[in-house]
Image (cartoon, rainbow, N blue to C red; front, side, top):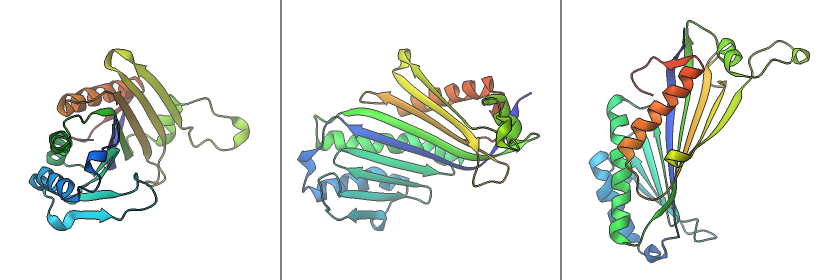
Length: 226
């Protein structure tokens, strides 16, 4: 029998690191703003949603941040893009691969030699546990309790894997939630080395992979989405 996770809060973050800084775009604010606006306006971003951070101490500091509706944010820097999406609905979850693809295409158009060196995806959530307790979930997945520590409240665990056939490096963290009383905190990280991504396929494959890991631990999602 599986422990059932009812997700209450969730976040998916993506960091795409460039193979080299895009110095071609240094001082090209018009190109960057137009590229971001045209890429993200189909997903609800408007001109007031673009925020320019001032030039600071190093070339890595300047950034342009775009609010994507009420559940997403994307930041462009000369050496990376960073995106975060919160508390997905079915529709917004389906849009995430489209947003990531669109936010990349304008860069390739502006800088034809552009390449990513890596992509990192981090999914995190706080969930209630149906018909079970966080102590039981962590007890089935974690290390043996230390009796000298006191009353056992469950031990968090961190798993690390390499998946050579997919060029993946993954990590899974399970612990007590500090947001939900009696809830479970989960963080799943997937790192991919390489340039262009099929975000749709990667999303499906990553979800299937995570579901398989959780199944081995006797855990399953019962909500329609993550």
